[in-house]
Length: 293
Image (cartoon, rainbow, N blue to C red; front, side, top):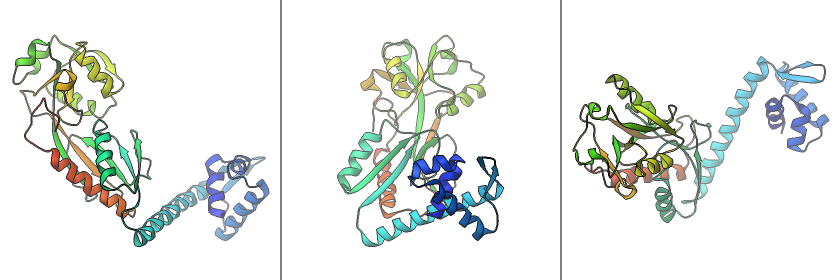
């Protein structure tokens, strides 16, 4: 009770707003905070008139409160695992492979119908997810990170484009082409842009799309050409898109799964991790740029 009152008050730096969120009278919240300060022997807030501000002591204490809440959550998961079978919940942060996600979830649901899944699609880790699915171009040696897939990144053309019959392309072939790209902050651009810079190539980018779905539609409608991963973005030929590898160098990216090594990983999360490993093993095959594996 005292810790939660402190956390919410620290969040707003306001007893009034904490009272409104917690449905607890303001005097009760103030009493809980004064009790904490008495136990610690230091003030957690600086009081200036009617306003309060979290001081340095309070910032340190807030970090420990968050750690304590994480420990309690981990404890609940472990006790739950001790008394249950394949039930519980898994939270997954998805920063890559969103096109594959519906099939992944359906397959896992078929195998483990009693496990609840919570999916977050974001650009940053909130800190509470069990697992994180992401991509990057370099390798990872972390003990709490496994590589699920290595895939090529290819030139993506509409089927009527003159270059569709080539087995591979050079950047020189693309000097007069119009490119549609994802925005610079996207994970894919963080792989592609250094590749272009390394080979001193400046693409003529006529448009930057918000998401892969729009990008694929623009390519298939002959609006321009682009760059696409060979596997995780789906069946290229079904979208009227031809994928061709680059001649200069093998351009690709890795798909990883990671978890917080300092937190308890529930039995349900371990099952989902094993499932993802097997799922990606099953789709690995020699590169075939027009087929979704």
